[in-house]
Length: 160
Picture 1: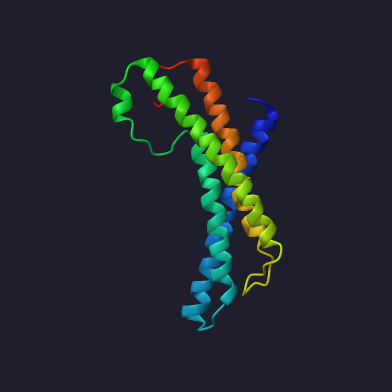
Picture 2: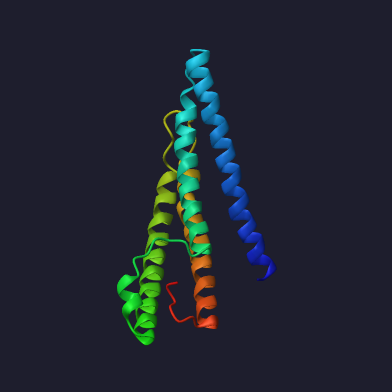
């Protein structure tokens, strides 16, 4: 694996961990303030919502890297090897087309977010909406890497 890919993997991993730890800390502070100190911190709920969104999207990229998405492969496993590869190739093409469509649509949301302000924290929403294009970029990169690995190794079942 090349150094730029390792750096991107590290960025995805570390940003996921940082977001997770900060979110847990913010939610812990929210619980302590609300139930122990009897003081409501309204920004914590909005922050947690935005952070979970980023976390979910980055988790998708991590699942892509480790090829861990849920699949039902019973019927594909029964098919001959050449048919398996045909199904696999068709599926990969469909997923890439979907990701490209989603990327173009998500960039429109980012532009809309530049004009929108969150109600409690008063931040522009484009920072939140950038989570989707970033995650799609990581997902396309990781999916492409998995395709290259599968084509190099030529396993009996590309879905395995």
